[in-house]
Image (cartoon, rainbow, N blue to C red; front, side, top):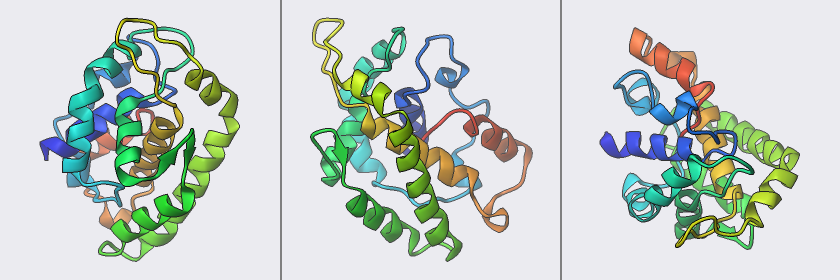
Length: 193
């Protein structure tokens, strides 16, 4: 359960729309509830695959999030995309991403197939709509010693997918209680995986 929360918190840090240190999303969810306890959604990677990337890159990501200006790429997300073979030269393999998400959705309720396909369409459209910002982030130079510049597309897509899938959880699958309702409200503004 901790691994799923850590994934959520890390991807929230990577969102291209969450830039400034005073952003409430950086504080994490308002309740000690795991999103998977409220609604099990399709996912791209197993928590263990994510943990290696998180361990390697989260310190840099936190430091970058305190910086103003053009949103920087998320090396945690790019690492995950590299592990799955979905990322190359600033592009996400949409067909492979779709296959992985749909594979993850198979053991879940049948409604997830269409919800997942719609989320993928919406997230890629959103990324296309902010392409200039994403491209600008990819062209940044290191701002501190040891900073690696990662392309923002990975964090943009992963954050969008997590946020969208959770928001679109079918009512019959969503656990209705105060904590889950607060978490849903939080994640309507703060992305996660």
